Length: 270
Image 1 (spheres, rainbow, N blue to C red):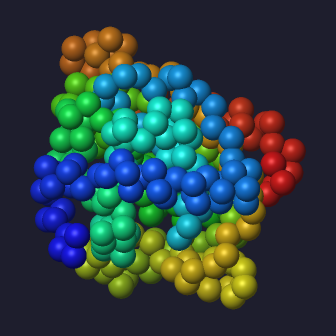
Image 2: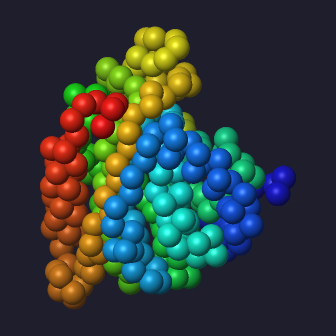
């Protein structure tokens, strides 16, 4: 496990996932998401058998707990033998090295996504990526994929349904003042390390800092809804318009997120 596979070596990444390793890491993750973040996940019955692309919004800055919330709920419901892969940013995969691969994480690119889906695995993607995870707090309950629609083509090419997933509460772990898009472009971080933001946050215990300085996330209650699958060709025909599919996916996710927001009584408390 000392060497990491090439980012596009899909077979190697698929083989890294270890159900026994997953079984060991789930208990401490469960304690964190159920205890500290009081997580709830609804709609797991909407995840179909076989390959399915879970498409989720993304929140929480450097500590996006919406990921382990879904991971714990998935394995508690289906068991650790059922394959589940999470497509993650290159930077995270470099930091994680041999830790994340056995847990089912793989670099977020189309080769890996299609390979996982065609193998029959449930696969999760966050199209908004760093753009959405560092959206300003005033836009906390907004679905924002930054115009990225590749997930639709990926689902079509793999012949699998899209399962929309929405979470609320993750963006209450910290206060995001600015995403820092312009600064990232000025520093050419998008070209150097595929990073499109340099956020400014207020977090505990360091106060006002760049968003890449780790802070202790506030214990915000995270609630997740898994929506009914969208079988693209059944719903949109044999030659679907990618823009229209993306619009419908985001609209359904926004409606679901608005519904979660309408039930939320207080920030952090839930």
